[in-house]
Image (cartoon, rainbow, N blue to C red; front, side, top):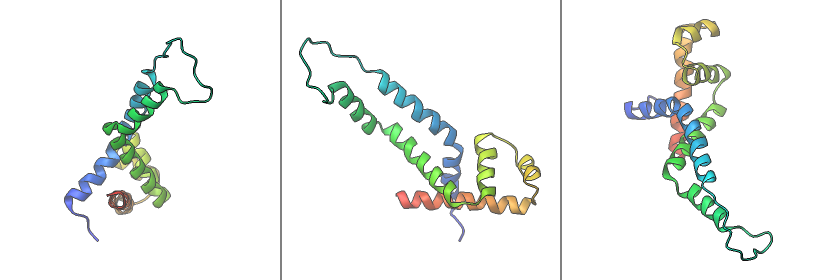
Length: 135
């Protein structure tokens, strides 16, 4: 079954944005978690209770739309990588994470260009399948 152009481009976009999403998740979480300031109002606090700052940070983490979008795309790619072959995982690692060229990957794998295309297509179809599961 062949993917439509927009589905194909969306799946490739998820793969290309993987590194960006990882960095974005770390940065947003760090920003939200570093905002906390201890409240020193002089009143005794009950032991083992959730403070207001922790609760507010939790709410901000849940409501941040950019963080949720990045997490969704990250999970889609991770789930798709679990479904594909080792060669497809290698292609993802080298092409989308390290930015290597196609011919370097083909040479390192020791396969033909057509095998490379099939493995890459397998990866893109797996990502598209995961996208459709979540929507």
